[in-house]
Image (cartoon, rainbow, N blue to C red; front, side):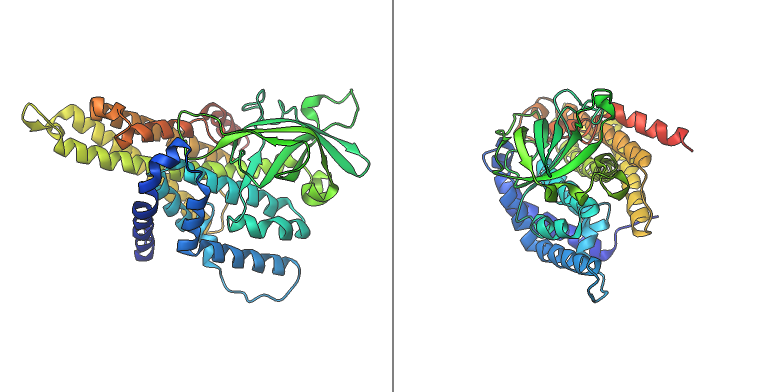
Length: 411
């Protein structure tokens, strides 16, 4: 059975100390939106040396891709990404206090930088990755639109048309994490070649990299949300944005040469959904801890409520959920460390189960706390709102069912 090593536990305790010192004192400002999360994330990166590790790892990877001699020494910075041990530890601990911090960090460093890393040319990687992986610049990943929802590709209306060597982009994206403040944006749009016989749903999807301040690009103010409020979410509007060919990821429209944005997005979906499980684990762990403490100390009729069987049932079911989600996360870590890929179907199953479990546990924690649980002075109120977002974020739970079934039927 997988277990955390002594080093892992030491890192976990250090992360907890950072959270207590640097995040909890400003948690209310983060949740209200008064304080954007980016400087807090940069402080986290600097404290743990993540910025320098990421910079070194990218420099080595780019040098290796360019055919330059590189000392073949494993970079520990890589362990902080994806389903790696350090990434899971970091994400699950941060989720206990501010889920939005993880969302903003994951979209910028994971989705945005990850898409450029996997789809871009060497020149494009050199151009954008160094400042993204160190969080010097904030990234956004824009695929969702007002009328598309789970039908991300078929319902996509944002489009580009060729204009000489350039492209002209029009359309709108919504629910974009980091959108209001992003410096670099990976944007998906359909290619309109002017042929009315081609069904709009079947048109090729291309991926571009845009930057703040480009003419015709508008970034909205942060939207008001139910939860995950420490992560700014907004809209992007494109009004005849001129895009030069060096901003087309892969610099080709040929799907066989990394030109098709659909395969790029699907790879990112799997990574994002694995990450949801570690966030769910963090929320479950915190709700479980708070509920056990509260049950021991809250008294009714002269007895701690932990002596009541209905309360014991709630705590037992929380523990079952914690063990199940933890095992799913551990399985993903083991596969990743063995060099195996977690399939989209499996990642979707992890996301579906863990987000549902986290929401149920958080709502039961609110119920256990009674009237106190409904007050924002008690942490379980925020955790319940944050947990619910996991059932929608990274693809609604309903669409996960489709991906799981497709994986089963393809076997």
